Length: 215
Image: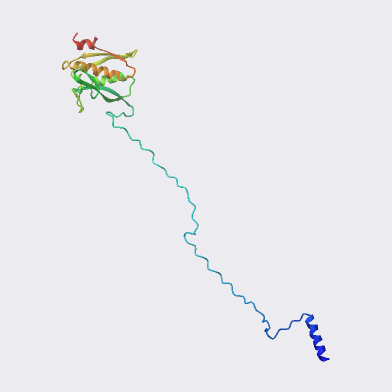
């Protein structure tokens, strides 16, 4: 009877869901959570590669202005307030190499002269030519066939493209080859200007061509 009651009690307990630890398995131990102290991690060192780069600023670079390079030095440099005219001299026996060929195998060569600014550039050029007193112009070796003459410009004007040059004084020549030289020097000095197409020259009222031809 006791045995049956014991079995019934066990059956009731089993049906109630009571679990008994088996002899083979030890009872489970209660686990206690261990809280470890929080240790802050060291901050990683910032390398120069990772460092923020400063903002780049734009630098204005001023370039030097272009240097004007001058051409070859002229015979006479034109200065403020001045202008340049040409006078024609003679390269003896040059045979047209240095300029326009004239009689006796010579050449007419232009030389730049600086003068004060003027409206009468034709008169100024002729007067500059007549003022050269030496037989040879400086160290150029160019010959001046007018050096023995004593001539002044009495009247110079331009009419319908013709330069009318009236000279007075003494015309002296050094030989027959000076004839084309004198005529060439005077005429080419006048013909340098675009407004002049022809030249008529008189000395004391006589045409230059007549004096040079012996008429």
